[in-house]
Image 1 (spheres, rainbow, N blue to C red):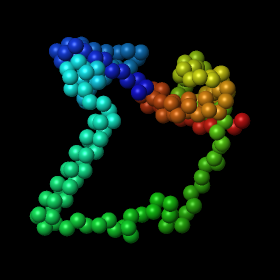
Image 2 (cartoon, one colour):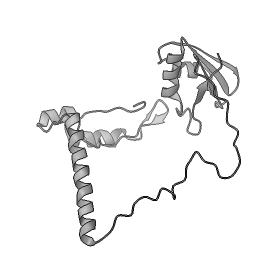
Image 3 (tube, rainbow, N blue to C red):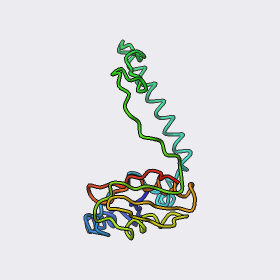
Image 4 (cartoon, rainbow, N blue to C red):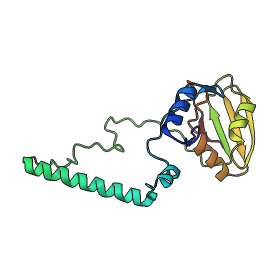
Length: 185
């Protein structure tokens, strides 16, 4: 949920007023995008008496999907439409490469306590990266040996992995994303 928040309003009128007033507002150099929730929050559902626990909602949804599939099959049978089975020969095996070329693969670097960030924008500095990674437990430091390249050190590999999973693909600017790999120990 990075970069997202949920706000519960008293009623639809208050939510509409907030949406119209704040949508597009610049907050930390980014424009806010505000939308109505796709479903009622659990807190509001409890207040109005329509609350159903998540496990039960999931079960109801699965039962409804099975019922819809059965109805569709029954309609198809009634209309005389035969279901065409999947043809296993028509599916391509992604592991097979019929072109005869063996694409060179990047060397696999084993997990380590160091992360490597490459192709960073020129305006990116140690302080900016430090602010991003500081939120993860075990963070030690960021080093930028040259423009566009940074090493981020953590106390150990599990902490580095958590940070990599959380920040890999993070949008640094409108056109640049953070690309992380493990560094060599």
